[in-house]
Image 1 (cartoon, rainbow, N blue to C red):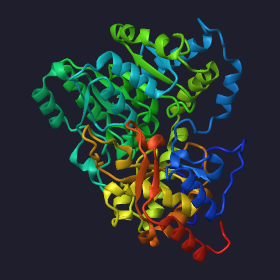
Image 2 (image 1 turned 60 degrees about the horizontal axis):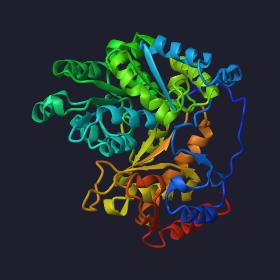
Image 3 (image 1 turned 135 degrees about the vertical axis):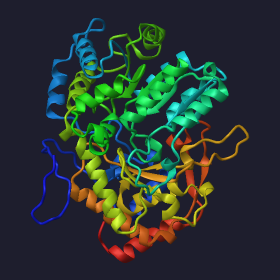
Image 4 (image 1 turned 90 degrees about the vertical axis):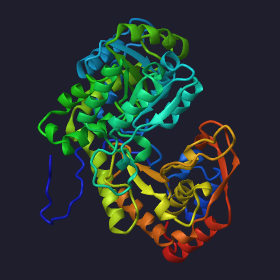
Length: 481
């Protein structure tokens, strides 16, 4: 749906009203420097009371609808045989066409179970792009990850509409080289997280499935970011412009042997699910649910959350519900680009992605430019984003840095949470920071976990650049926060 403004201005229009609010705090810039230091220059470790706009992630922080809140009051909290489980199972079957459903407490629990069952030492998982926890689970079980993306995926300013597509020729060549028996499964991620939330097309997923059928391989489809990908398919893929969101969803899900998702993203609640039509695969994975998650009919989830997911999945079939996130992200990306700030184009899902390699070109990748920029954005604005670059990788077995393909700062756009004035505020502060980008310095680890270090590792600034940045802020903004 398009709403035009008589003035000619193009801004996204919220198709909801706010009925519950949460008070926010915007501390002075000097306190933001102090908070950033105490957090080890890792935005994950900031206290939320020190954050004005939490743009770290969209995982588990999307706003629930009134219908989701109401649904939680009718949850059946029986340990076994819960009607809440049945309602969610039926909704999943209705939307995705899958007969079997395994509940988990969140998406990475799905990855753990799928990897334990199907990944063997020496096997490989080709994918359109890796996600941090996915790769960690695969390598933990003795497998390796091969990224089979199209060349255009790494072009940060591109006209390619589906940069999340898998390169079919490269995929076939890899299978021929390694042998089909050494391929654990092929994984496709909707809305590829680490390259800017870029979508794949329906046609590409069909091509991947054809390769799976040719070589007798499983297609595992991570649909955690499906909502944004559905919006982009309807907007950008000519063959599906007149199809409903429900029809596109079913066509996508029919291509996969196994679907899994984090409901903290898809469904706007806290949980996860593995879905399949294969009884053999279902039985192979089922025993791990009770072992790791909880009983088979709640899988570590609160039944109240399960009721909310049931409603949230239905709301995902509504274009008005799923379009606001991408439209706000598009708006933020466009406004930053107008001010010269380098962003990933075309704008994808999940959040606005800022290209740290061009924002702070004076910083080497080993100085963690994306991490430094994320810290600087917090100091300048009180908004918390997430590093998606070399800091999000992990060292190789010899202790050498694994340099990422991109150095991005993701400013996530939780669904139905922020107002347009708040988005404009962040744009203004990032634009100011870009004009003063030479003040931003590097960082170095002082506490470095071996696995998933970006979650809870601590760093230090390599100079007094945070204090100099705060001083410049005071010079330009005076008493303003």
